[in-house]
Image (cartoon, rainbow, N blue to C red):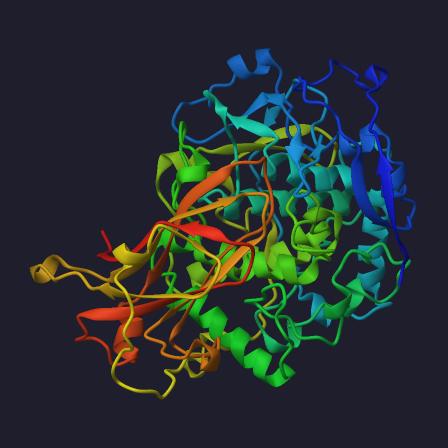
Length: 561
């Protein structure tokens, strides 16, 4: 295992680095950045010895003012980042980090038109030392060896995620609002494009246009641990020393992991995980709003939207926090925090599987994409395999065969109804608990149970009931998680494969310091039917905190509109 050391350093500014003009920085005072680092491997500099360019060239602030004014797609309706002015992002430990590239012009529109379709394979099926493994490690090593001024350099590719995800941009037309590609309907398409161009860069570096990235098959038993290719050797370019040392193979992943969770028997954890996948992909993902997340348009304040889709919160967030190292909850590293997540090569395998969930939801579960023009016309800027900036739109990534890839046909055991959560045998009457109005608003620093009235049906127009946890307030930089139970009289006896466990709310640390106020919704009509509570006038709702306290403003049940 690589050693860890604490290094404090300043990041100096060097105007000679910029080939055009430097990006516009705010005038915040640069504080020393305290980093927990491991020894440098694979031709990379030690994080404690990086100069400014190592944290500068993430993708994002590519537009000059001229190129913006000439852009015919600069509509007012889609939520778009303001590329002409990239600012410092914020690490969870409150220090600032600059992930912005120098301003450039000459951005071309890009529409994929692949003539061949290659297959992304599961990472679990790759053997160390195989031809595929050798190509994969060669590509990542070459990416790490590229000049820090090359936007295809591995650290600069990681900074792409940092710039877009940690408050590097403001919302176009609303300079006081930060732009965000998480917690909304942009989550899936942005990450699809991101992984796509990363894959194209790999192909270019090894001169093999048939190469594809693997996907981490964490939704099936054979993939529910860190794949061996990422942990085979500390000198491998696929290795990352900032993974949780308690979660290395053969430890089975926990798709609902919280800090402090105790490891259970591997066979039981697999049962939990399959039930969680069924809940998230089937029970709770009935509509595009459920699956993708809520609409995000020009002028919207991302901190007040209902936010993330089902898969983004669980399992996506929990795979991140389970994998990444955290000295404590306030200082997560690499996969455990959005600003640094893509510094671990496993990030791209994780998000390839997240992308695969999109294809499964469409092809196996009858889901559908949005047809809203504000989603279809939203665009992003990436560097392609030739190190040239290109503009891509959501509407052009919906058919993955046109992007030139498909996914290996592997078993999907959670599609089987046998893994569906089962009710826990218990008393038929609900325990006494206060009304929500007697409890909220309050800080969720201990378990809270309330009795919530169900709405009256109004003829044939009533639809599915939605449990809404209202006004969840927290700082975006904090790790946040709480679990939600319905009609459970003993949460200590309940398990993730019980129907009474609805799921959780979670936040992966990222962004500037700001208070988010959002809601979390759960579909409960099917759940109440399975619990034999269809005719109940009220239900018992219990919240169990799993992180630092958050404020909750209310709980109610409404019909899905």
